[in-house]
Image 1 (cartoon, rainbow, N blue to C red):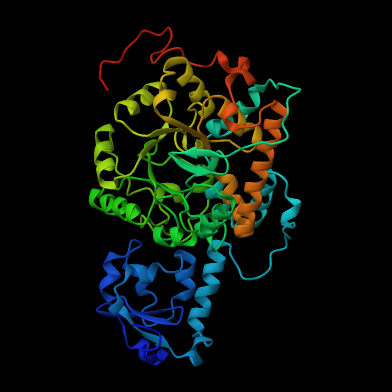
Image 2: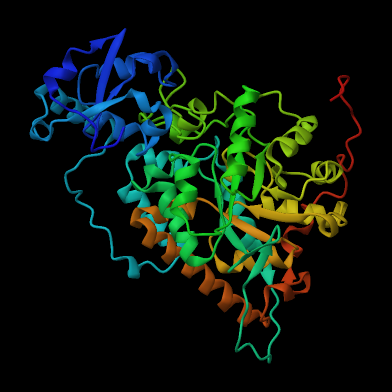
Length: 497
C-alpha cells in the first residue's frame, strides 16, 4: 500500500482494534494489523498487546531498528496512516510509557552532563573507549565492554602483543608505503577489517549502517553479525556498489532458518561466511549480567534480550537459539547452502586448525571471542605462534586471520609478521559509534596512520614484506605448546572425545 493510497485514520479508529483477535498498533504514524503476528513475535505476544489500539512508536524504537516491521509483516497488514493532526498529541498513558523506557534503560532525550570532546581530539583507539564509557547507557557499555568471568583472556589478548618486541631495520627508503591487501581475493585498503559485533545500535541509532558507510569510504571489509540490530539487506544497501561484506554465522537450532539465512546472504551479494564455532553457549559475562537487559532484539536472528534469575546478560539471553549440536560434519552443509567461501571463526589450537584444513574451508580465524566465551583460554596471538610451531603448513593452504586485543598499528604489524592475512577489530569500532559514521572513519584513519608509521619505522614499505625476523618473541616463546598433547602429563581420561 503506497502512502498516497493509504487511508488516514484517527486514534479513535485504531482503538477499536484492541483485542487479541483484532490487534492494531501504530508505528511511526503507520497503522498495522499485527493480529496474526502476536504469537510469532520473538519477545512474546504480551509485549505487542500492551500497545493494542495505541501508538507503539516509542517502545518499538527502543527495541527494533527502523524497517524491521515492514520486512516482517506482509503488505496487507499495513492498514493506513495516522491522521497527522493527532500525531503530536500522544495519549497521556503513552507519554508515561516513554518515561518508563527512559528510566529502565538509562536513555533519555535530555542532555547528559558529560560533554563529548570534539572528534578531532581523539587520537587513539583508547580515546574512543574513554568516551564510550561516559556516553553509552550503562547496559550498552556493559554489553560492549564485558568479557567472561575474571577477564583473564580479555586482558591477555592485548597484553601479549606488548610482550612481543619489534626489531626494526634502518637506512631504507620508506617514502612510499602500501597497506593494500587481498582478503579471500577481494581487495581492501588495509589489512584489517571490522569484526562481527552484535547490536551496534546500542552505540548509535545508525548502528551497523554507520559501520557499512564508514567502511565504504575507507575501503575496508565489514563482517556483519548474525545478531546485528539492522536487517541484513539494510546493512548491505547502506554501503556502496561492489562493497565487500562478509557474514558471521551463528547456526540456529532450527536448521531451516539457517539455510534460508545463508541463501539470503548469497542473494544480497555477501562474499563469504565466517562460521562462529567457539560459542555453542555464551560465556558468563558478569558485568553484562549485573545490569538489567534492555529491550533489544536482533533484526537478523530474531534473538531477544530479557531478564531471568541468572541476571540480565544480553549475550546469554540472546544466544538461546544457538545450535549446541554443531560439529565439523556440518561444514559441508554450510558450504552447500551458502555457495560461498567458508571461514572457521574461533580456532584456538593447532589441532583444530589442521582439522579445518581437511574440510577444505578457505580460511580460519584465530579468535577467543574477545575473551567473552571461555575465560583463561590462551590469547589469540599465542595460538598464531602455536600454528607456526606445530603445523606451519597451514599458511600455505589457508588464509589466517586473528582478532582480540588489537588496539594499535603495531599490533596489526606484529600479526602480519607472524603470517596473518589480516586482523579483525571489534570493540574499538563499537566505541567509535559514539560519533556515528564519522567516528568509524576517524578510527579507521587512526589505525591506517599508525600502521603506516610502524611499517616505516620498522623498515618496510609494503605489508607483503612483513616477516618474523622483525620480531623478538622470546618473552612468550616458552608458553607456545610443542604438540597437540600435554608435554609431560601422560594421564588420559577413560571417556573418549
